[in-house]
Amino acid sequence: MAVLHAWRTARVTPLGELHTPPRMTAVLLRLTVQVVLVASLWHGLYARTGTTAGLDRDQAVSYAVLAVLASRLRELEQSAGRDTVIQHMHYGTIVYWYLRPLPPQRYYALRALGEQLYGFAWALGGYVVCLAAGVVEPPGSAAVAGVFALSLLLGQWVLYYVMLVTDQWCFWALRNNAALLILIFAQNLLSGVYAPLWFFPDWFVTLSAFMPFQATLSVPLSLYIGRIPLSDAAGQLAIQAAWVVLLALFTRFLWRRAARRVISQGG
Amino acid sequence: MSGSIEVRGLSRVFHTGVRRPGFTGALRSLVNPERVAKHAVSDITFDVSPGELLALLGPNGAGKSTTIKMLTGILTPSSGEARVAGLVPYRERERNARNIGAVFGQRTQLWWDLPVRESFAILRDIYEVPRAEHAARLKEFDDLLDLSSFWDTRVRHLSLGQRVRSDLAAALLHDPQVVFLDEPTIGMDVVVKEQVREFLRHQVEERGRTVLLTTHDMTEVERLAERVVLINHGRLVLDGGLDEIRRTFGSTWQVRATLADPHTGVVPLPGIAVLRHEGPQVVFGPDGPDAPSVHQALKAVIERYEVTGIAIDEADLEDVMRTAYAQAGAV
Image 1 (cartoon, rainbow over the protein chains, first blue to last red):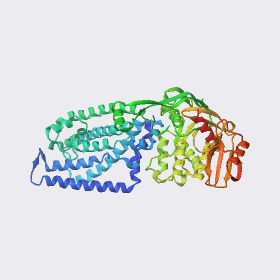
Image 2: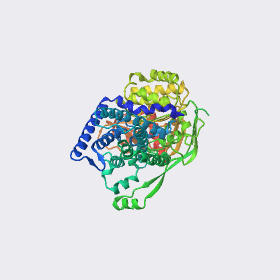
Image 3: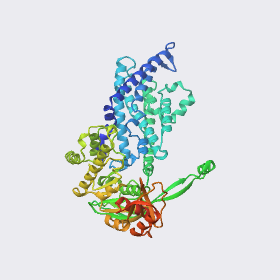
Image 4: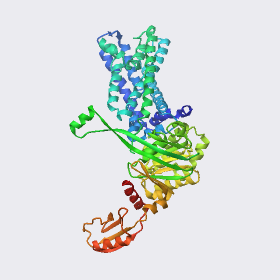
């Protein structure tokens, strides 16, 4: 029952950001610079060609700009608020997670939900501005918009679990810096943030299909720009849902094991 | 029983890897790791009555924090049993969480980026405290800890004293019957320490909370606790009132001698230890069970050293505990 009353936990990140205007200004600047640079880059790449890898210029720019906006949905660096698992392990404050009637896994999930909703507000704002400025194309139809929204939701769910696994790693290794660096690179590369996956060799695309990263961003964005037709959407959504279930079971197992590892700080 | 703590034969063993010295040793440890059992707490038994403040004392690494972690449900004991307010904490962790509050030294449970009051509101919702009850308790805590002067400040900008006062309030906002305080006043100035002590006294005497306190501050023990449990090397060494501890370890003395030549090399005498140097003065105390009487010690010091002044002090609790730790260490 504590979960129902603990919704305020979801407000921690948004409130922390609102109390720190310089951080919000930095986000705004970073997003603006990234969107302008990415849009310019893809305009430049398409300057002498109409279609590359089956994608025209407007599709490519839309994909790249949406990828930048979507990467804002959940920042991978959450240390400013001193509420990451690695920081709690370092400062010994992880014990408080186990001293409340709200289980640690629920607290973590509520915090992440707040972060993702806050990030979504930024991404949505950026999307509206880009749409109005003609940088991003609107979705092909209402059906495409609906499927994209559902796929984006599942993709964020997968991303939540991927990040949770790296955080849970701290219970064993005490640090997850290396895992986070690998995750950020793999996430950006394999989900198509750096470049759409169809620009990569076939073996690379096949390999990435066995990992969850493609399900986080590449699938929803491909649905948005029409690279994945609506007729194939059901299969892709099913794969995303399967990743959600698989990772949910795995992280649940890890939470149970992690509880036995809270033995930090002196005797 | 409501608000009581019952500990029976509680033990906790940690199995840790041992690293062999040198490069070859490190390589061998990697291939064939050696594990040893460390008995952090061994067969401890004690009770705390509802509304009692008990000081759990012992030198660093004695097993105090491990004991508290088992009583709060964070750690499962290797053997033995504990009940806190009628619940077995490590089996019913979530139910137990509603009955207890805890502060672990300078480790804050408040949210770093939020004003203190927001943290209180989050905890109110997590513990499902009715708003009116929360407001009334916050007012009571504000009167005692002067929280309102800084509760709209973000936690990252608080001084240590302000943060610890906020943490104390946060730990008690859900009205727990039992409170665990692991060195709550460490590093704080005397004014704030006194304010915290007053707050704790109020919580015990007026609110009837049971408090288990660990501290290295003997003034705190003298001001707050009537009973003390002393542990060392994970074992219970003594369980009794302060008077009993004074009788057992405090029937002691200190001889304060001012040396004519402050550069004289001072060495311990048979049954007499050098406790400390205070400028030109050297403070001697009894060493072991065969220590001489204060008069014999006085004679021995005067015979051995050239002194320009000498005085006899009654040992304070700090010295009593030093003696207790020293004897407990030999157990």
